[in-house]
Length: 176
Length: 220
Image (cartoon, rainbow over all chains, first blue to last red; front, top):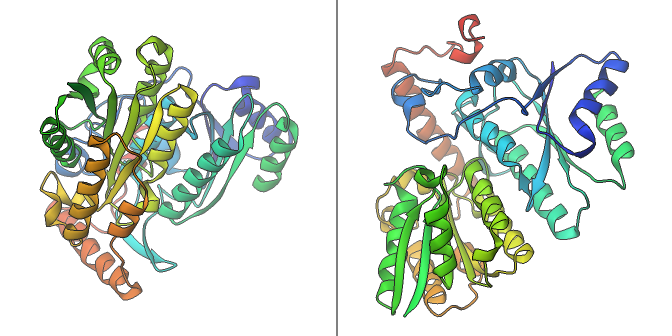
C-alpha cells in the first residue's frame, strides 16, 4: 500500500501525484493535512507509561496513524521551510514515533531505530517556489537522516516551478 | 547590560533542554547579561511575550530536543511567527542548542542548519550551535552523567564562552565531544536498550507479537 500524506502546496503536488497514480492504476491512499488538526507531541511519556503505543491526547492523529500502520510506502508532500518540513507535516512526523519500532539495530556500524509501522520506503517531496543550493542540501540531508534512522530506503525530491513535471514523473516511476 | 533571551523549544519545562537552558542562563548572567528563559509551548496561542523578549534581546539562544532528526514541529511555527513579525528582528545574534537520544551529532544537526537558513533569510547573525547526543537518557541530569560527560562538559563550556563573547562557535566543539562507539559497542548498546524495552513491555503485559493500538479495528 502507498500512502500520500500531503500538506497544501503550490500547484497541489500531492493531489496531482494522486491523480497520476490512479491513471496508471497504482493503488494509493491520499491524506490531505489541510482539514486535519494534529496537536504537538508533548513528550509527556503517556504513550509509554499510560497507554503503551498510543498517544493519550485525542486529535486527528487518530485518523492518520492507523492508515500509516497499513502503509508500505510513505510519500510525504510538504512545503519546505528553511530546509525542514512544514509545521503541519512535522507535527504528524513527530507523532509517528508512537507507531515506530522502539528497538535499536546496528547498520553500517551505527545504531539505528526500526521502521514506522511496516513502511519500508519513504519518499519526501519538498516543494518551494525556487530552491537555492543551501536549502536543497539541508532538506536532502534531513531526509537522508530520516531514512537512515528508520533503517529503510527512500529518496528526497525537490520540486519547484522549473522541474515540476519531470519530478512528478520521477516519483511515479519510483512507485511503479 | 546586554540582554539575551533563551527559548526552550521543548514541550517539557523540566528535562535536558531546560537543564541546558539553565546552564546557559547561569553563565551569561555572570557575564553582565540580563537573561530571560521563555518556554515556547505555553506561548503557542499568544506569542506576544516571546516577540517582546526577542525584540529586546541582542542575543537569542534556542534550546530544544531532537524529534526525528530536527527540532519539534512547533519550532517551525515559532520561526514562521518571527518572520511574520519581522519588526522584532534587528540583526540579533542567534545560537542553537539541540539534544537528542541518538549518540551521533549528524542525527541532530539538521535542526541547527534550519536555524542558520532562518537567520540568513531574516537578517539575523547565526553564530553556531551545540549538538548533544544521548540527551534523552540524561532526562534533565547534568552533562557529567553522560558516558562522554567530561568531553561534552568541556565543549559546552567553550560554546557558552563563545556565546558570552558574541563570537562564532565552531562545530568542531561538538564533533570533538561526540562519543566514538566501536561496532561491537553498537551491538552491545542495542542489546542492552532492547532488553530494557522488552522488559518494559512485559511489565505492562504486552506480548512480543501484540499489535499496535493503531493497528486494531476499534481505533480506525
